[in-house]
Amino acid sequence: MGIGKRLWDVTRANVSDFASAFSVDADTRERRRLDNEVEREVAQEVADTIGAKAGRRARRAATKAEDAWERAFEEARARGGPGTNQREIEGWYRTLEVPVGADFATVRKSYRRLIAQYHPDKFASDPEKYAAATEVARKITNAYDGLRPMLEP
Image: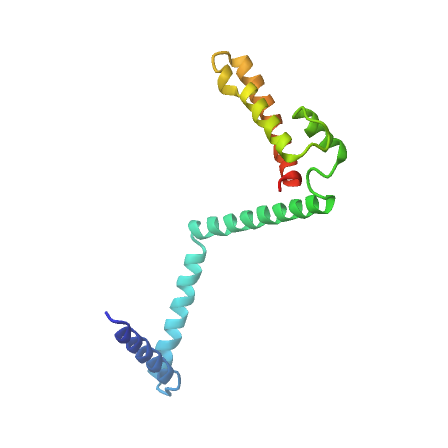
């Protein structure tokens, strides 16, 4: 069906509904009243289905989660965000084994060296060493990720 035909059908239907709204015929008014009543009943039945109720609960839960996320984000931004604490920044430098205030190239070089040294895949045969290496690699990566935005050119 072409777009022109579809527009013509929609226009014709709207004109018919518009004309019937001003009809003084009792049968037409009664039919319109019954149609409206049936539409309200169907809408109420649909609104009371399990799926509709679950959807409303899911939307409420999603809205609450979004609100909690926004509040947490705003609180973190009000505190200055992660990494503004000088002790934490110094800890990152120590973790990466570079002097405090080192430039980005030095930090990146140290990060790559330490990750190569403590990467968990090197210790895959021993579960205890693997777990320890995973934790060390996680700390090294967190330190690098904390310093990178401040130092990156």
